[in-house]
Length: 133
Ligand code: HEM
Figure 1: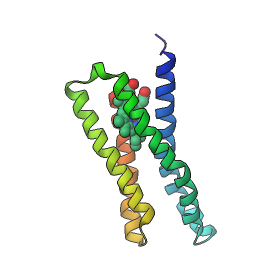
Figure 2: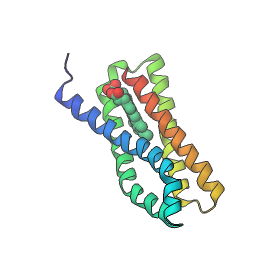
Figure 3: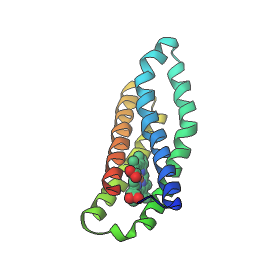
Figure 4: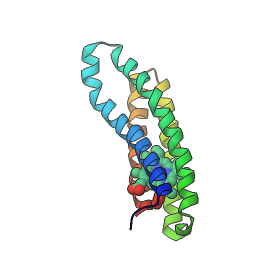
């Protein structure tokens, strides 16, 4: 059975925003050595440019996440409900650690919060796939 038009819009927006938030973080992390080689200030400039699309994408995830819950309310029981709550905690952690990463001024702060935001973003993606199953 084909998805309805509104499901296509809802899930496309959610998944495109997830590719930016999650995929963008992982790609930027992989590019850091090359960016550093291009100049000491280049990684920070690239991170600032990424933040201009990452935070709007995060906002889209929150809005379409709420839409997802409204659209899939029938599934809202048992393991699905627990998974959703765990996902929400992980999403908040991903946002908070991304914010702290952007404000970090020490190498240790950048590394710890960068790793935490990447891992929690990836966990939110995996939990989302579990919810959609
Ligand atoms: C870092 C933030 C987030 C990421 C990376 C993310 C990622 C995903 C992914 C990849 C899916 C699977 C889509 C599919 O395969 O069809 C999904 C589904 C879902 N997400 Fe998220 N999501 C995020 C935030 C949120 C938030 C904030 C909420 C709730 C407020 C939410 C609620 C849901 C629900 C209920 C589904 C199941 C949708 C369905 O079955 O139609 N997500 N998410």
